[in-house]
Image 1 (tube, rainbow, N blue to C red):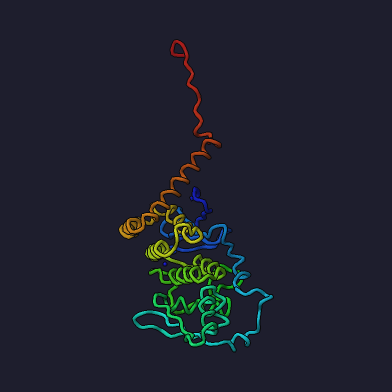
Image 2 (cartoon, helix red, strand yellow):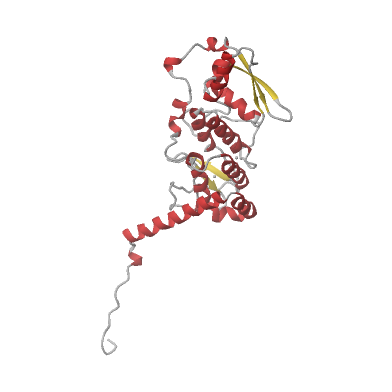
Length: 295
């Protein structure tokens, strides 16, 4: 499912054998291509997403509405049938499930008509994403959890340190779109912040960008803007590693190419304005003096 001219600040970091890394800066996260450290780029969250506040926002239940954990476990069990060809059956307590407005509306029908089985079909959803969604409803987090005071995730031995295929980026992207669909804003914020903790390669970034532009709305700048900004600042170097894939992505999602071009042109305009407001001494030319008689 990542120049000084860009809207985000960029820093140079040491190379790491050709992978794309996300390094911590004063702004949330930086992704750097090691083979060209002099052209470091950043895919940082937009200003609206303050990663430092994610932990405070993670719990979807207000303090005044809080019930004991045991009381939630006494609530009716709801069956979730996830997937189409080989569906998986999950069980969830209704008191946790109704923290989502989407499921709250469905569960109200169970109370109105007790003859309706407490079962919900989710044929188009990803089992791992649904599992993480439920984990968040129960605990306010999901694995891998964010390490306290850091912009990194706890170690997951089942995945490589560098996301070459995009599977780790897609994991959090799917959770983001699921949280958006089912109305859990705190989970959207959390999953979005975890995306900036992933070390990835160009191939992984291609797959991530493809998912984002296929499954999010045009006006969803929270998730789309960092993708476009990243490629706008680094497309000239990353294309050499995945030119065919990059071209195919632009043809598949014209909005992706348009967003990148818009940012490139905006940056160019900003540079021109800055040069006019603060001309460098090297650009100042003296008026030629005309002498007489060759003097």
